[in-house]
Length: 275
Image 1 (cartoon, helix red, strand yellow):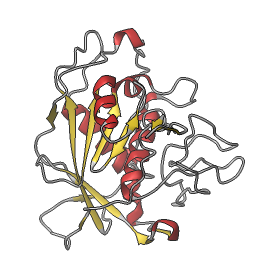
Image 2 (cartoon, rainbow, N blue to C red; image 1 turned 30 degrees about the vertical axis):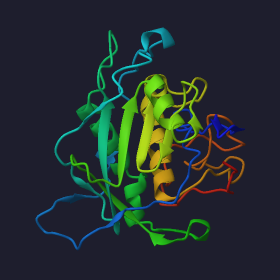
Image 3 (tube, rainbow, N blue to C red; image 1 turned 90 degrees about the vertical axis):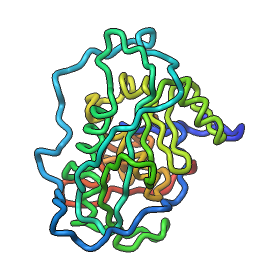
Image 4 (tube, helix red, strand yellow; image 1 turned 60 degrees about the horizontal axis):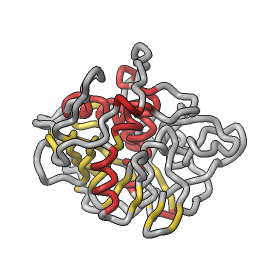
């Protein structure tokens, strides 16, 4: 991808190839501090049933079957979702899907379906909500025992809006922020995460994960940028790749990994990579 005329390695992971512009890694801002626990609000800690699961292998649509443009405006999933996790900082996010997508024979990703997929990723045992049990300290991004909880809201007052859109719309909106997504990649700018419909439906050719795992990687990677993390490199041959690594471009000796934490609660990190 190109940002302001400069060629950058496209972001990736199960994530990368759905996120070229996610090379923009501005520190998280506008996150609301979670209020004291409210006994009337049910919080859900990550559980095994929330683990992204591999559904029956879907038919991967071809480029010709995927719409490249639609209305350019968005429909937001209504209502509020459950509170995910017990982390100190609450991230309130909205979920939107571009209007007017001609789905044809492709099963439609309506806002509620897209929202459910994101919620499942965030609630998975090794997702970002696990930071409540395993706080993250990283001096490079000024984090000391940081932890997050998440809730989807249907209002316009949010910390971040996650949008699923056709390649042409992603190119237009990301391009306005100086990010060239080339009809393929996704981006994060300001308080908006743009997920490219093509990569969401196809995954990253050659990257050895299921489409569900790819979705987990994309969402975890992009939320990681929102939380303040830049790209990382492999931390050592044979180790799980950091979720902030561009794994679909080059694993660098690491093994594929689409989650910020591994089974023992360790936050997977590596040397910083230029973005």
